Length: 496
Ligand code: ZN
Image (cartoon, rainbow, N blue to C red; front, side):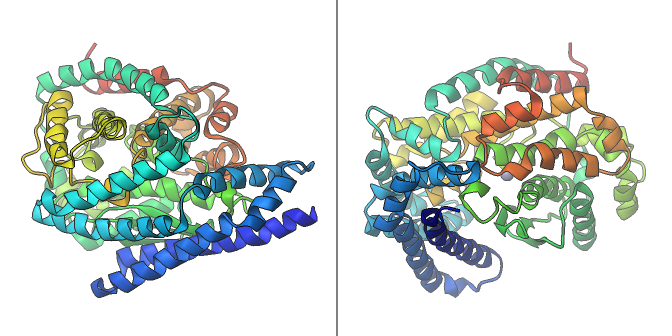
């Protein structure tokens, strides 16, 4: 190994170790730390974040990268150097103090957002949102290349290579394809199944969901499951992957599909090769990550084949509520389509419209001077336009998601992109692999092996769309997603 690469690696290892500590602090704050810890812990986190920033943007790292980029390196090392240059270029134009200030602002804003959401009081949160937008715009201005627009700078952070023009095309195709179908289904006026909202013992739910996570392939020797208000996944490396859940007594399917979704993220992390974990090679994009969770949750987890061997176990866990509910009725219930207010609870078909709404608001924020006080109205108007429902409160409207409170603008579109990638993987496996046999046999190992072999192991050794192309032999194609949704929901609702 080149001497200079060894030197670079020692800086990068320190950078990764700090990142790991920050993930752990964040997870601890969300799950276990006492409320009063927040101020001092946030301060410590911002200091560690600045330390990491200083390492990556140090003259030593820059000089090593500048030399190494000219050397003939093995593929993996070359990739690390390229990604390090990309990552440090993102940061080097930002003054260090402003970077640290931004970390603290994000931590504070998340606290205030939670309070504002609980109290349904947007005015508590809006001054923080205004500051976050101003800072993100300033950072994007520092970072943008030539004529690049500001929103494109942010979109590239979460899905490298994707631009506003790409997403415009993608969302237009999705809208044209699914809006008429949603309208047809709405006309049928099918009511949601009442059995899902009966009382389900929380302890039994916890046990079932732990077994479910294990069943889909989440390895508890390398992972943990705990509880938070909003389910999410984090990881220190591929040997310590943690996800959270939230159990509702009167909503059986909520925790089940969170387990399958977050489990999908978790399995992806656990199946990454040792050579890529805990390095800049461990993260390729939010779109690909989301494709793995949404593939498991929707394409696999809401299918009859998946539940065929598993449903009797669920019935046995809740005999009073489910003994007379057939598998067919259960599958229809968990695929119920209805325009709704909350993104995380939305069905698979209307879900992308929730993303379109956020995407349109973000585009506006980053292309003009927007008064943050007008955003709740804009949010509500867009819900009415796209989904025909108007949020009765900001808690059920603009305050529902944490992303903007963390300054994460440009992230939302990757949820829809991930869904589209998931559909392509699913359609490929239906055609070229015995997917239904894998699922009905009650052993998901062949499926998780396929995912490991073709997607998970690589981390960022390849880009998202290269991984997809090599896995399924085809380029990204939004029409596959639209056709998948049409075929599935026209059959479920007997529409032709
Ligand atoms: Zn997710």
